[in-house]
Image 1 (cartoon, one colour):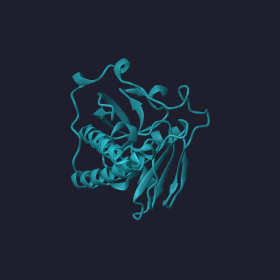
Image 2 (cartoon, rainbow, N blue to C red):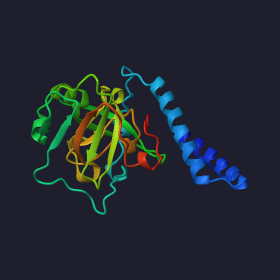
Image 3 (cartoon, rainbow, N blue to C red):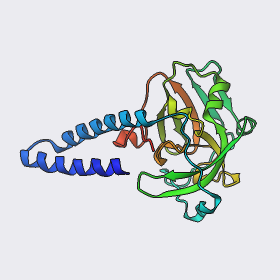
Image 4 (cartoon, rainbow, N blue to C red):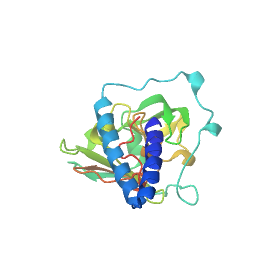
Amino acid sequence: MARLITRRKLLIGLAASTALAGCDTRSAAKALLAGMGRWNERVDRLLFSENRLAPEPPVSELTPETAFPSYFISDSMPFAPDNWTLKVGGMVARPAVLTLDQIKRMPQTGMRIRHHCVEGWSAVAAWHGVQLRELARVVGASRDAQYVEFLSFDKGYYSTWDIESSLHPQTILAYGMNGRPLYPDHGAPIRLYSPVKLGYKCVKYLTEVNFLPTRTGGYWEDLGYDWYGGV
């Protein structure tokens, strides 16, 4: 959150100075945001380590589900079609179309983690699912893949991650929350989740995962949010 606050202050200062100078404020603001985004990503990549795990809060800190905000961009809550599958493709040796049952038969992992939202709030929940690195192994993801794109059936929501964060041990495709199946308000049937990224990067209502050589954008990233979005 500190990075975003700093950026807003800089943007306000830039807007004031460019207005006095008669400059195109929108162009200047765009350039500033792009520069700050590149700087943030360099710093985040330097701080990131695949061997550093986020600590698990105690059970006593679990957030009541009625107090854990849910979010979607569709006009009404998205529900998966009866024939829902997860398509996995891109730079993989074995492209796959997986049912929820097939995904649940993969080795399961679970974790209790604090979720951080870019708006400043946080909440704790227990998640269970399959590590994305296990999915990468199953489909034979290429070592040349540098990014992973996640698509959603929530009105075109999507995001792209760096491969290092995608394969972090705590990055999972979650199909359960707090010991029961994931409910639609939190992204059923499967959502992306990891403590190494801010909430808007953790795509809900997954429908497709693609391993790519170059990065694409994201729903909020295309509107100016940090592309890296690290915690």
